Structures are given as C-alpha cells and as structure tokens.
Length: 281
Length: 278
Image 1 (cartoon, each protein chain N blue to C red):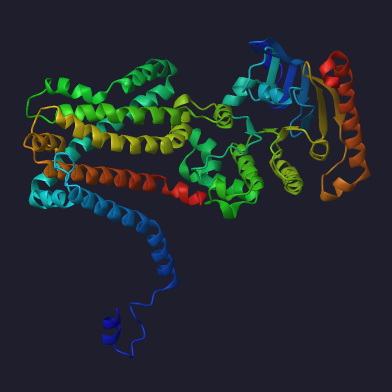
Image 2: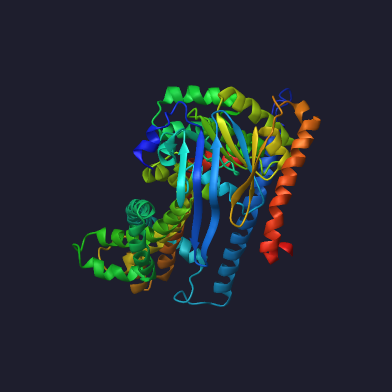
C-alpha cells in the first residue's frame, strides 16, 4: 500500500486507500460476518493436517487435507464432471418434486377430502427411508439411465415441499375468511387471492429443506449401483480402489454442490419475497 | 321466506335492515347456547345505529346474521328488502372488522381494489374507484405503501375504504376502532360521520364504548346477555355531529341514559346467574 501511495501523483489527492464512510461500514460488516468462519475454517484444517501428520494417521482412517487437495487438483476434471452429473440428478428431481408437491398441496387445500386422503399417505412416505428405493428403481429402467436416481430425489424433495405448502395454504385468518365470505367469493378465489400469497414463505421454507435433501439423496442414490455417473458412484469406486484422498476430494465436490443449491434457493426466495421483506423493514 | 313476503315490500321503499323474530342457537359439545332470542330490529336507509352491550350479549352475532356470515336459527333477516343471502351476493353491504384484515403483500391501493377485482371490475375502473375512495378516507398519498407501513388508524381507514368499494347502501362495522387509542379513535369517529354523510349509507355499528355509540348514532340499541336480546332502543337527537357535540350537555345526557339502560341489563342477570355477582 505504501508503494502504491509513493507512486501516485502528489497532485491527485484521491487515494485508493482512503474509503468513504459507507465503504468502511461495509468493510466492517463484511469483516464481522466473513472473518470468524474463515478464521475458524483455516484453523480447523490446519489442526486436521497437524493431527494426521503428527499422529501418523493412516489414509483409510483419515486423509490429510494436503493429500485431499492434491487428489482434487490431479482429478479435478473427473470430479467436476461427476459433480455436474449429481447436480443434474438433484436439480431435475428437485424440480419434479416441487411441481408435484405444489400441485398436490393446492388440491389438498382446495378439497378437504383430498387433504384427508393425501396427508396420511405423505406422512407414511416421509417415514420410508427413501434412498432404499434406489436399488429397486434401478431395475425399472435401463442400466444406463439416470432416471431412477432422479425419481428417488423427486420423492425425497416432494415431502418437505408438500407438507410446508399445505401448512401455508391452510392458514386462513378468521378475518380473511369472513372478509372473503362477505364478498361471496368462491373457494378458488380464496385460494388464489389469499391462500397462495399466504403460503409463499412456507413454500420457500420447504424448498430450502428440499434443496439440501435433493443433493444428499442424489449422492446416496448413486451409491446403489446403476450407471457409473455422479459423485456417489465415484466415491464407491475410489473406496473400492483404496484411493481414500480421492474419495474425500469427491466429498468436497458434494459440499460445493450443496452450497450452490442452498445459495440459489435463498437467492430465488429473496427475489420473490424481497418486496414484502423490504416493506417490513 | 315466501315470495309474497318479498313482493309486498318494493326494494326502493324497504328499510336497509329488517330483523324479524330472529333467534340464533349455537350447538356446542356442552349443549345448546342461545346467543340471540327474539330479535326485532329495523334500520332505515341512511340511518346510523349502534349495537351496545356487555360481552356475550350477541351484538357481533347479530351483525353476522345481517351480513349472512352466520345463518339465523329462526326468524327472517332482510337487507334492502331482500333475503340476507341475496343481499350478500349482490354486495349490498360492506363489512369492516375489528382487525383491519388487510392483505400485507398488497399495496394500500390493491387492498382497496380487492372486492372490485373479485367481482370482475376492469383494471382502469378499479384504479379510478380506489383513487376516489383513498381520497375520501384521506390516504391518497399512501396508495403505494404497504399496510405494515401504516399506523393502526390508517389501516382501519383503508379497511373502511375497502368496505365502501362497491358503493354499498349499508355498512356493517364490528368494533372497527376497538384497538385504537382514544385520540385516534375520536378522530376516526369524526371521519366516519363525514364519510357516511357523503356516501349516504346506513350503518350498523357494534361497540363497547358508550360515548362512541352516542356520538355516532341516531339510535342506540342496548343489548343484554344470556340469552342475547334487545332491551332498549334509545333515540339520540343530537343533530349534526361536530367536535362541539362532544362537549354539549345533550351529549352527556344521552350518555347517561345509555349507561342507565346498560345498568338495567345487569340487574336480572345478577339474580338469575349467581356467578355474575362474583
């Protein structure tokens, strides 16, 4: 910085070092938000490295961060491809699950007989360890198909979206119910004008849960045979060939994928609900 | 209701509200609760009538019978000479609740437009009507605000504007100022007198407040609980309401007579119901 200052023309008082109060406030805020997790993360990895090296831990017990990183840089092309495959499985499944979840939730909110029929079934579905369906689904399609994995993801993602959306759609304040009755409004009008806008924040809560469930389910579904694509499939292969650092490097891909899904759903939520949130502020 | 009964009163001449021998019985797990018994009430067109009485006297229930939000167990309820259900379908009345009940994802303007939108009024006409109504309640500058950005009194004014959207001949109000502070409340009462004067709508107004009932109404309906019934109708001949009305001796005299009527309603209950004395 001093070098930069020395090089600057003395006539130009504007220095890149001097910042506006707003920028300073932003920097303080970023420092307060970003700094603690970064410091903690770096310290954690350093301790991990130190522990593995000092105690001479075998790679099949715990791989050193440096080995994981070199495995990642060495195989990054294949790991990124696998991450994209898993991402596609998770995304397609999530979209299918969300569409079906919202449609069925709308039916459940509109027709109480449907709600009475569907909700116990969905509760039962939520109790099924859904990834266990993966090996069964693999036999329904061709060996080279990713569809069984996407189906499993769709089922897993459907549950939180359906449950949250139904909850949002069924919450109708007595004053709004009476208001709409005083307008002689139809059930469908109540659904469109009151229930759906009411349910949006609940839907997004469900979507956020479903997004992380979708990534986890996609990876786990890839463990159970089927086409040799995706992070789950790579991790089983790596372990089979005792390449533990590379298995860990694949897990790193899964972590990044999970974060991407989280950030994207959060951004969509902010964009859609942003105006309402801004009005509250 | 028979066809003949409808035919004998032509809509133009019929009163805003006619309640004839109406009962309301709620069937609960503990048995039957008689909320209203033998209600007879007529509200003329353009008349301002308040319903007052202790909790549980059925004043809100009576308002909901008129609005056809609850069916009467027996008797008839007519609005503008039509059965209450028909009047609700025809949007003969506007309803203002104790809670403003605004939709917080809509702007103030869009909240006022809600009933018009539901009844298929075109965008341009909706907008023009909302402008008119917001001007009437003095909120033109807040059309694009969200309800959460408004004070309680302003929210209630939006709710009143919304209730007036379909130009109803009858306004039903269930303690709309109940949650407001005293100063705001008096300002809202003055506003309401002006608004109903401009629209010419009849009003049935439920309240707990004696001064509020007296200030607003041409007639105060005093009710009593267990079972809910009308015990007295008190005329309030105060003429045009202004801020000076609140300090007039006639105003205090009317308050006293309503208060005495309300005290009278507690007498028999205390005798019949030993818990009331506790």
